Length: 249
Image (spheres, rainbow, N blue to C red):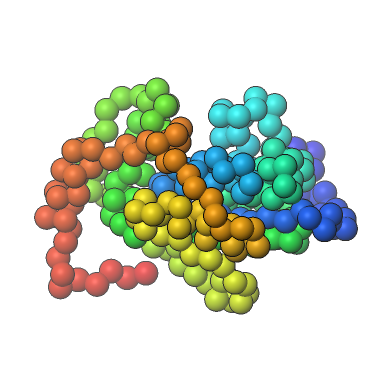
């Protein structure tokens, strides 16, 4: 029996009574949305958990812990420990694709106690798509990553990422519409203009005092956008920007 089949056969453990003060939130977002920066700033407060992709074992082993598990049940334990701050607030970041990986194994929204939701999105979808293509080509997902090779303009790849961003964003729209679950929404560009407002919005959403101040200059993450992105944007719009065409879903 393979490791994957053993996971699929493992039953979801019964939800244990949670501590009254243990509560948290999931940042529901998409790749290249600016969510690494957003989550790093939230973690820097010391009271809003440490939201990371805890259902992404490869990333966690690469960036945080070489022994990080792939078992979703063990990952839940990590969310409630390494993902938490001393005040009992835990946090995680999740994409639709990460949900698809973990959903066959456990009902994560039920196992995590007192869970709330933060919807984080980037308004500039084309910029997000270009960033995704560059990162995928060079394997430089963070400014600190060494990277490999030089990025090459690829209109087809950019167009594919535009479609994927719109489709996967719609999955979150449908999730919240279908479930009726409340969520606070934060837009990346607005957060850059006023990070204190975004951070304090999350704090108040969790019934914490909204009097936090953050210094985004202390974040480990830096914007990677440069003149190459601008040139790709101009070329893509010139080639693909026919306003007499409406894209099918």
